[in-house]
Image (cartoon, rainbow over all chains, first blue to last red; front, side):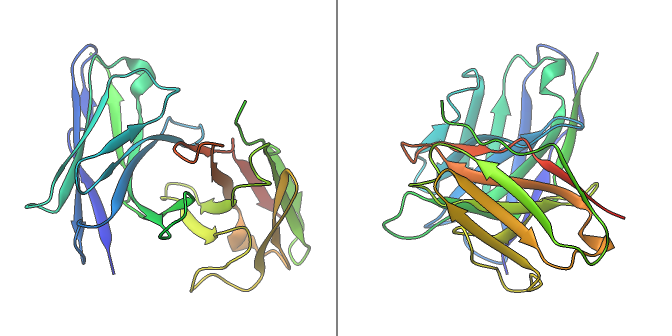
Length: 122
Length: 108
């Protein structure tokens, strides 16, 4: 069974770049889509974007274009970078498998990583 | 605009039926999905494609969708079902993903 694990710093200073990695175990990252989702403390879920193992990406148009998602198939990992962070970026960041049925534009997220809390503070 | 709207809270007594709604203009054409998130934990998929239940999810969880509204029903809610529930779907283009604002279910 596929499992995901987020890793990265728990504290980032304002204006710096947040970098997180999601390691996929129990299965290959190839042939699938993978997403990042975040949740500010006490608030709801917000989809950030997805990446296909081939490297193609798609981002939430409601977010400013500070996010970059990349993939490293040799390490079975995908990553998230967020530049120029502010306190508003403080959140639990989740990675998840972006599951799709062939020929359908519908998708769902399953499974999820346990999440990592990233706090933006000086 | 493409968005999903949920009631902030629902409260039931143990053994009663809890119904959580999710409304959105894209739902007539797009599936709804439901996630359960217990305090301090990652979300867990409880319903996919409007009404299908993943393996391991209790039978008391069911889903339906009609027109612009999807509904998560928990028949005979139990104390352990207390959680935040989020509906999820894609926008009309199918390229972007959106969650509802979440519903806090209280069972007491």
